[in-house]
Length: 586
Ligand code: LR7
Ligand code: MN
View 1 (cartoon, rainbow, N blue to C red):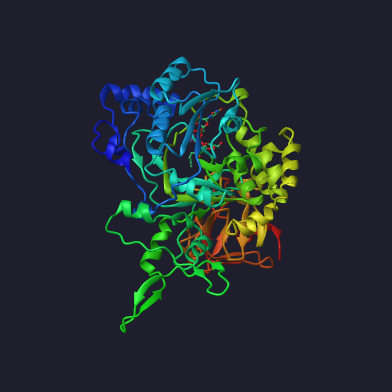
View 2 (cartoon, rainbow, N blue to C red):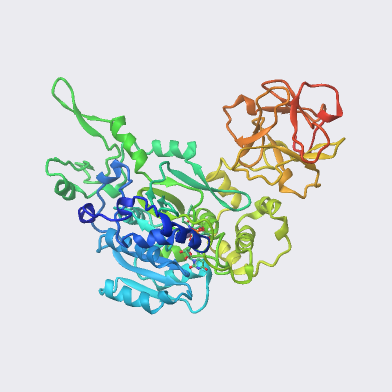
């Protein structure tokens, strides 16, 4: 692969993805810029626009040979007032690391930026750097927001496959072939590369380390989750030793790669009588018996295990910015909701819609793209609107059926707000004959916890004598914290929703109450873990106690202070140990 050798001997700040650390005056200057740009622009400006990045792919990825005929790509990079060096480093990395025969074009879609250097200067730079015209600039005539900007980019594109990127990315070696190969194999797949982290302070390019898939919170924010067990099983159970069909046709290429390889095709059957051609389902490798006869053997575990690092991983959702789809298919399944403004929500919308309307969403482990994760948005939100909130309302109203209630539990403030006209999106859903949201939950995201379904009880957990309820006190559920108490809000506060699950957990969406089990211990909310005996609780609506199973101690309201915490106490007959759930389901 040429790009690797040409990048090998480079030296300079940030090469090989190394961090750039500023000192003295420069450091001070960078700190002043930080709040505005939300990343270290001075560090970025020091780094070559064509810097090398480490090849963080698994070794097994490097041995995959793709068909020589792949669909062509239009890479669409949308931006609004992006800084110069990250924007152009994105473009350079794409041109330098994509085989030219597959790169139909790179579209820099300017969403009505008002920074001078993004006007004429950018045009001149692009025309002189890429005189063959492979990089094009398309500009919107009003601020469109990232959703409509992507639609505009997709409409301007003419390649077979669309690949969207944020305007502060660097693609890794070999990033494009696995995306194009998989779409060639199945045009109804929507694909995300594995997203690597580019540090906002030092611009260091670091691998993600562990593979994750996308989930969501009922507040309709995106979350990362470990690959669930059912997906690991599905991948492990793919036909014994079969390799993805994108590895067929590789005989010559394989020998070109390694002249010491002796290569056999898979042998299919042609029936001697009927001449019917049928595929060899087995995909085995050759062995021998001690009587010196040839035998067919199953692919040994050691070779199968490698596929764990190369096969597509199905994911319920995507983060949003970095993905590939067959261009025509992207429009067939409804592109994006053009009624969504500026930022937010479109990532879950396209995820739910893809699955519900017959497509698949996958992460491709062998395709790696780095992204600068910034701490805030370095651009304005016209009208100061909560666009994530309103966009999420549109998505909930169109796609989530009765489950939209769980979104509004978190966003009561949105109830009754104007979310615009959604009739065309409802029409689309009907026309495509899409599945229900329940189908999506059952089939694509079965591990998603529903606070008010398949549980013993849920809602406010109230101590009647004090009228205090268990309350997260606004703490972020991703953190570890002690459960608090607050005066009961009569079902109006998402902070007071807890569920008693069939697994005897006292839990929220992802966090479960845990306790050391000693007299006086608080109840700590942390990541649920079914293996933990200290996370099991018993409650029955007759005695109204909440008993910590492992220790046998009872939850006690512990005083009447609003800022207090419930704690474990020896069980006794007292009002301070009485608890009722708002809703009992059995
Ligand atoms: O009005 C705008 N017009 C634009 O063209 C606002 C933004 N943009 C551009 C912007 O210049 C950038 O290139 O849109 C792109 C995305 O904006 P970011 O970088 O501010 O978004 P983000 O990275 O913070 O947010 C993630 O979620 C968003 C939800 O709307 C989008 O889907 C982003 O693309 C998405 N980014 C990623 O998925 C990258 C990986 C992050 C993770 C995890
Ligand atoms: Mn981004």
